[in-house]
Image (tube, rainbow, N blue to C red; front, side):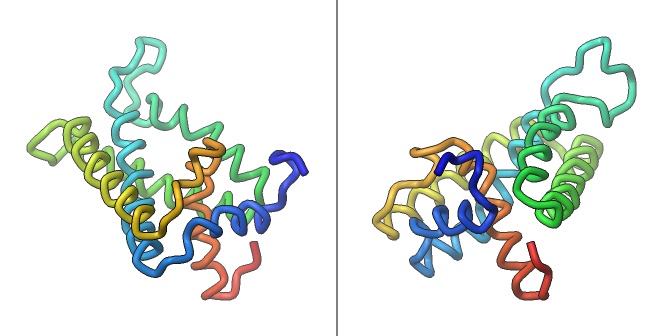
Amino acid sequence: MSRQSRTVQQWFDEYGVSHQNKTNKLIHWIMVPIIFFTIVGLLWSIPKMDWMGSSPWLNWATLAMLPAMYFYYTLSKPILLGMLLFTGLCLVTSYMLTQYLAMPLWLFSAVLFAIAWVFQFVGHKIEGAKPSFFEDLQFLLIGPAWLLGFIYQRIGIRY
């Protein structure tokens, strides 16, 4: 079966194969959202082009999230809605940090990104399995949705 025709559950099941160890799962629950946020923060930090105007909301982060949201749309509408909510939170947090953080957002995001990935690789060393994205980069987008899937299951939302 081609990866494009997989259901959201098939993606989650394949991702879950290398995420069985409780410690690795715990690390992912903390670090995957942090990594997603730091990517948004790094993209937010890229200087804007003149055509983007003066609104803080039209920037590289918001533009880069459009294809990601389309990917989630192809998985399921409930996953898209949850990821829109989380992405919106990341965008608002990035904006707030640019206003109040004592250091540049890009530096804060880069340091946090590096730390989070160290933990991710430690988790996979404990698991004894390489990260899923080594097989398919789309798994970088599946990670946050996989966690959201657990939240949905817990509160009774079908995805």
